[in-house]
Structures are given as C-alpha cells and as structure tokens.
Length: 188
View 1 (cartoon, rainbow, N blue to C red):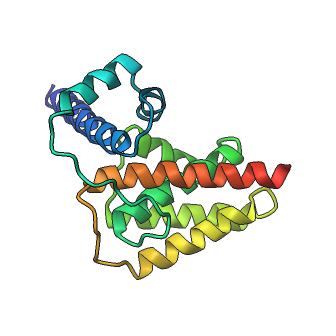
View 2 (spheres, rainbow, N blue to C red; view 1 turned 180 degrees about the vertical axis):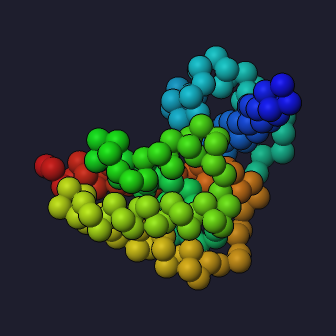
C-alpha cells in the first residue's frame, strides 16, 4: 500500500512539474511571436488551452526572448540537445536503437537529467552511432560531437532567465528540427 501511495505521489508531482513547464514554455514561445496553433503542437496542448495560458500571462512583465542558437554550452541546453538527438536516432532506427528505452523513460518522466543519467544516455547514443553508422546521417555524428565537447567542457554562463527545464525543452525541439531538416535536405 505504501508503494502505491508513493507511486501516486510521484505521478502527481510529475504532472504538476509538467504543467509548470508547459506554462513556462508557452510564455517563451509566445515571446518568440509563434502562433497559438504552433505552440499547441509543440506543447501537446489544445489551442484553446494555449490561448487561456497566454491571456493569463498577458499582464506579466515581458521578458526578452530567449536565445535559440544551437551553439550554447550550458548544461541544460546540451542535455536538451542530447535528448533530441537520441530521439532522432531512435526514430531513424525504427525504435530499435540502444537509446530507445532511455528516451522513452525520459519522455514518461521515469528518468531525470542527473549527471549519471546523462552519462548513460551519452554511452547509449555513442553505441548507436558506432553500430549504425551506415543508417544514420553525418548530421547525427556531428551533433553528438558538438554536444559531447560541450558536456565535457561546459560554460557556466547562461544569459537567460528561462529555467533549466525550459532550456532543455527548447534545445530538444531545435535539435530535432535541425536533424529533420538535414535529413530532408540530404534526401532531396
């Protein structure tokens, strides 16, 4: 019984954390000038729910937009990029990649971004890149090389007010979009 209650509490905490993250993401994306429809797609929410969140925060002090260049070297940004890369590898390998289970655990909130978990995900991504070189693009390897160098020698300076979870989420999406663009450009 205690274990069931502990599991329920964990699910509740994860749900609350996800709601806070989505609210923060909506503010960031709205600050970029993105449409409510696009924000709804990225956050997995309905357009009316996004509209409600935007209206709720309209009176908040407007913050400068977050920098969105992939070439940032703070830890949360690099962790988000690593997750995006791992998801792209998993999809490219039809969910048979070594990193697939880890990516799914991150998505479900079963794993968190701790130094040990990041090291484990890096090891799995490295293994997939090594074993499936022929099936993966050069963009996957190039992205991993950048991320790996950044994680080995991270910058302590972050010039944004966005939380670590928001930075991870934005970097995750940008990394995925970049790799998809590379894949589309390569197949043309």
